[in-house]
Image (cartoon, rainbow, N blue to C red; front, top):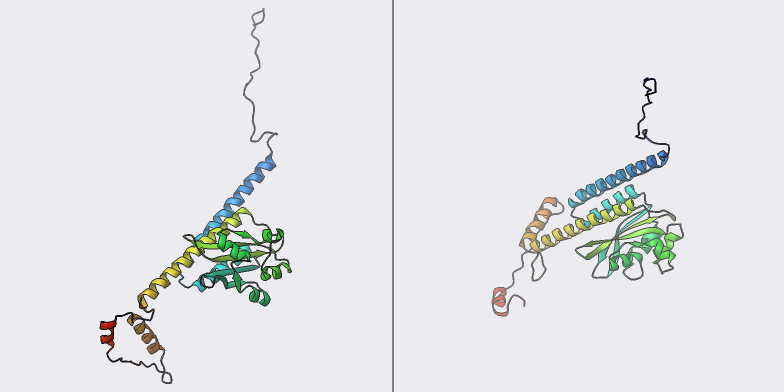
Amino acid sequence: VRPGGRAVSKPATDDRKKVGPLSDATPVGGLLGDLIAAKADLEARNEALQLVNGLSQRLQRRLDVTAIAAETVDVLVGHSQAPRVAFYLLDGEAGVLRLVAGHGFTEQELALGAVLPLEGSASGTAVREGRVVSLGQVIRNGREVHPVAAAMAERGLSSGLCIPLTHDGAPLGTVNLIFPDGRELNPVETDTFQGIARAVSLALANARLVADLEHRATHDLLTGLPNRAELHRRISRLAESGTERARAGLVLLDLDRFREINDTLGHNV
């Protein structure tokens, strides 16, 4: 109030800072880029999850290891755009890996890589150590490689992964992805491939379990020979496929005193 009694109005002030949608100091481009990157990463992971789940459901309906291998290779080729995909199964008795299905290999590479040893190959290392082996790292470290890897490296195909297939700690084989030089895998791709490997391993284990149960149900445990149930099944198949020119026949062989031998000397004899 001035001496004359007239009030003087004071401009209203607001102590709060005026903040717009984004202040001048906010890195709009950087924030927008982070949001776009996060959205792309989320979409890629969601797509990868759908891919793994879809493949797992399809493989669970297959009980043939060859069909499992072929479908796995088709899915990997379509997803990863890898020019070379190889599916190996472990032959435990021979101690080697055998090629079951592949894509994009030359005849020379198929011949060289038809059978891989557990010692002296990147795939064998993946099986023996139960870990993913980088083919490019093996070559860069100067380690000895299998002739099939050397042949592919001559054509600029020296990057890739050998992913082991295991179930309950037991090795089953490998899935190999071979890329051109310089092809880098992002974390989402690596996680996707390992998820596919787990789905494939479970499908292989189920197929082998069903095959083992079926063999036990249709074969004699002592001799390993087909039993009565298998005989009936085979005869039914022959009867269905028989024609006028090619008919099925059954021969019965009777052994004299066979029961006497069983009773006195035992079933093992």
